[in-house]
Image 1 (cartoon, helix red, strand yellow):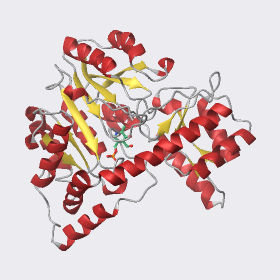
Image 2: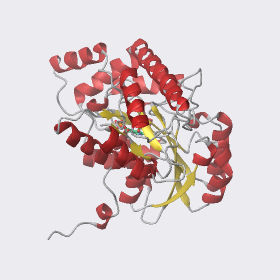
Image 3: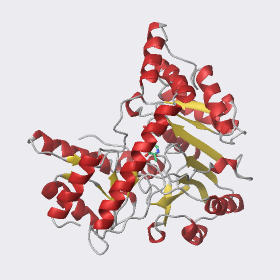
Image 4: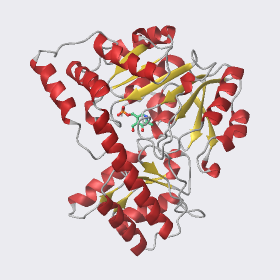
Length: 385
Ligand code: PLP
């Protein structure tokens, strides 16, 4: 038998992938599964972005690029960060990566040593924990579920959880899996703690473009005192419906970029050349398509919230992303509920436990209204709501 490194044995396989596999199995048996477990938009990539990729291929952009990204894309990203008030970042503060996930991986590898403490706000996206553990980190977790996923109410708990020992805190607003958008006041509370304890903070803003009811997500790095301790992370997957293209980036102080650049160049070399060219088009020329998708998500959010309300299910209202977390098993077992949802109603969802929040399930509403209706009807028929 092979002897594996402890770092991989510390980590669980992705819970969301396990559900997708189960859904695929049922579909292979000929069952009609409503899959509300997926973390990607259900739209095709906008045409102008595809055209830009084709043009880039035809123009011969097929070789390696400079490791941290092509200058055109770094310029375009820096411009867009400036537009959001993140004026501390120029092109030299950027690493362009094959997906936001790789950006996170490089950040954790660069900052976290064995035994270093990473703070997460639960429910938290599953990969933060895995990446912290792969890097040898330990976790301290703060629950926001009792505050309907808003951060204000959890700030006291966060203050208790972090200390001078805390190396890194991850903030994800709008957030996966909860859809909450943290208020400026709440983020100022985070800032105060980060400054007090000298904590570096990752601001994962991958859902920043997708917010509702006029709410705008505040970029943590714009707050006074956070300019030099925030790593701002983003990607093209969600806003531009480009999940399979694998394109993301992070912006950070130059000293961090030069260290992380080693992890980056020795692992992936660079992001895909023609995809980076398509990224320039996405970031500079795709506002209308992004807005159209946002409006579709907004409608579905209203619709699905309404359906759950009709069934008396408590759902903290999400202000962003395309997820919501109904409290489907307040006194019971959410993993069991999700198992029943898929086997008895053929509706795929992800148990809150996977994100550190038992009692809830994550529902992605990146799906048509007809399918959302179908899902809720089936859950009701199976007596699950
Ligand atoms: N951050 C969050 C919160 C996510 O939900 C995801 C994808 O699910 C990512 C980062 C990474 O996405 P990608 O690697 O496709 O850019």
